[in-house]
Figure 1: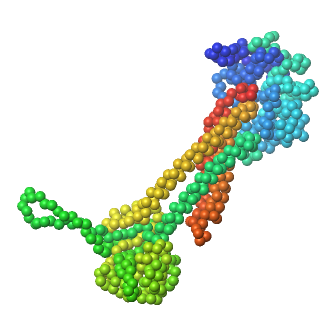
Figure 2 (figure 1 turned 90 degrees about the vertical axis):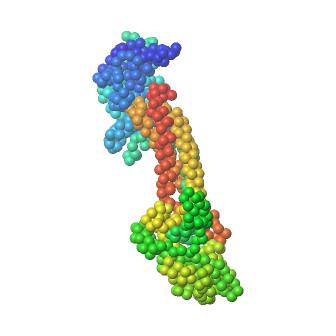
Figure 3 (figure 1 turned 90 degrees about the horizontal axis):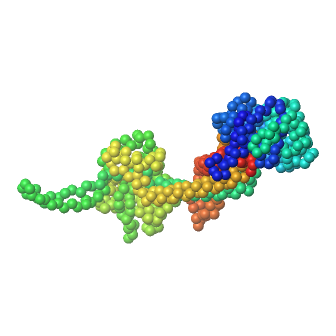
Length: 220
Length: 411
């Protein structure tokens, strides 16, 4: 991304510029921590990279494809195939089992054979160590378990980029370690690039690179 | 869940999760649909019943001879040019007349594909005399073979047979008791023209109407023709059709083709049809407003659901689920609510109809009127309610599809 700026409430007295021209390149397979105080623009940055939000100015290329000017349908497709999200509050779909949650992104495409989806979802749950929990509802699982299901779900479409917005922020130290190790392993095994927002300096220190976002700018 | 598209799976789960809301709105829809189904079935039953009653007692179309036209009577033959002539126009007396060329007209109509039966009839007034008692009657001369196909007199015979030779007659129950006669007794029948004949009562019928049982008598066509002075002629021709509702247009066609006056049962029962029209209009109005309240109910439940599910919607969008898919998820929910509600409502309506059939009865225990439970009524209620649900879901679904995922996820 180059020169990305984000302004909220344009044309209103409360107009605020949250990102002031961010230049950032994430290499394939890179594991990158994003740190910075609350309100510095970390989440906004992640939302823009994740194509949930559009930059006010600047360019953003995902896997080589320029996203500026794409319509919602194209952005949705790009997001679905290239980006996996993990949120702070695990955000599983509450009425569904662990397995169904993992299958959801594949179901959404409507193009994948059901047996293939089930096989892949089972395999992903196995890799996050939750095979025994596959038929449990999301609400019946602990926070750490839910977050591991969320990781499995984010990997369902085998995306080259994983965006994790404080995935460990809501977990106890042991669970946080578990989730972080899992992300690291995924990064290592499938060369998935990870953008990992965290307040935890110890975890950040174990990443390939640390980006500090302060007041909407990247501090080098 | 392989047989369901993705949107259907999510829609079902969302409905199942909001269980109480779903139950309430389905009940609401069900009550509305149930009421409509029940009311419509009653109305259709009432109409069908009346029509059946009317049509077993009268032909679909009756051809009548032309009325005698009034003629102008001139005062004097010649008053010279420019003289103003006044005239006296009197309504003419209507004698019993025959339909001109009735044989060829009957043959012509009988050949039409829409026509089932064509039966000639010679009807006039007469007097029956037995001892000191006499009664004015309407003497109906018929060809039993044809006439019974139009009006099922054999079903209405309470005593005796339907035999109608030249000296037989069938009379109503009232007339029989008034004159104290029964099957096998003889009656003298004299017409206004002065001719008379002695006939044997071969059967006594009950038309289900006191006035008709008092006045109507049936004799053979030839007997009536000679009594009424209509030798070889008929006073009317009765016609039945395959499609009873086409009677009015067919009557006009007959008049156009033959020049004979033709009255349809629809024109003869205009008042009934006005009443039916009014009922139908009322029913349609009620249907419309029930449909509207069902639509608003479904829409409001879905609006709430969109708010409740906004986080889930955001997550789905982040997963790469498109706006169109979100839209369809909520449209399907609306359609499902309509479908479910109308299925339950149809069951309710059916139960109400069964109860009604069981408890709404005449004093003698027979049903008030027969109800035909028409599957088409239920099918159309289900289809309409589902379509209403889909339409009602449109605004909430659009709102869901337009949710900003960032805002939605943040909750």
